[in-house]
Image (cartoon, rainbow, N blue to C red; front, side):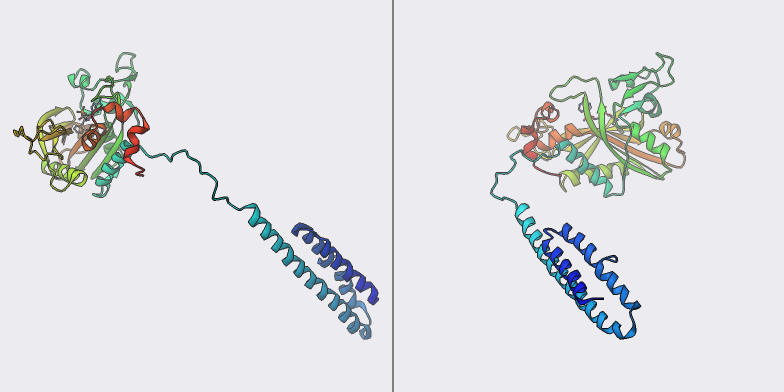
Length: 360
Ligand code: FA5
């Protein structure tokens, strides 16, 4: 093993490292000059075969050469990494003086955020959010809810039929765009064992013309509680809690007799006018636009779940009772924010939604 050969190997390695212009090239040079089949590694392996008296000198020679090669490699590696870091800093620099993208950030529609806020009131009381399809079997939308085929109440909710109506094509049950969120009551009772506590926000459809107080596509929130021993008092307490959570601690509700096929007894629920708190009633000096000086605002329908509905949905009416209510979100949003025309809510003009801010 000649010293000049070892020195040549060392010098070739040092020259290759110096010539490597980037980290990839250096990696290649590293493999060629320090890897298992590099000349110096092979020379190192040959030392074992040398006669004992030559081993020490050869070992020192090769060891020094390899030490110098490794040191040069580390130095070049550090240089090239520093070059790369400096280049990346320049290439990836952000020009903070450039004008920003002026497309305004979007916001969620007040209907969505308000619906979630109402649902949250019930979630915090332990209710579960339930959902059902918007294209619904006529059976769930009407029959399960005690609307008999010729029941006049079917006309109460003018229906978009997707298939049917029932019987016209020999169908067992037609298919409708759900006219209310109440079919989710039936689905929830069939899906779950009592006790059932669900809240269902969702979109519903009726053949109403779009005008200042109606839209053919609107939203409702439905509530259903089924348990042992529930009474109208529980319903009233739940309604009061809801309006207090949404409109303030001094709010309350009142019930007026009404009729729905799926609740018995049924009631129309009103809440105290949150603007005048009833003080405008009989007080011409203080008229209230929000409630037309009636003191109360109509919210929606409610009642104790009709035992016929419990039976249709597999719940034992001897053991369980329940209450339900449902109301329109658009109308509630109108009262809450003094919106005079429902068309403003549904038309999607950002000049309407922008003042509601970026609430998410
Ligand atoms: C129902 O839809 C019942 N399912 C409510 C119910 C649930 C009663 C559970 C008992 C127990 P009603 O048809 O009254 O009831 O509609 C409820 C609310 O939907 C109304 O008070 C109103 O706020 C809203 N609403 C009805 N039609 C429209 C419409 N075309 N545009 C906007 N909101 C509407």
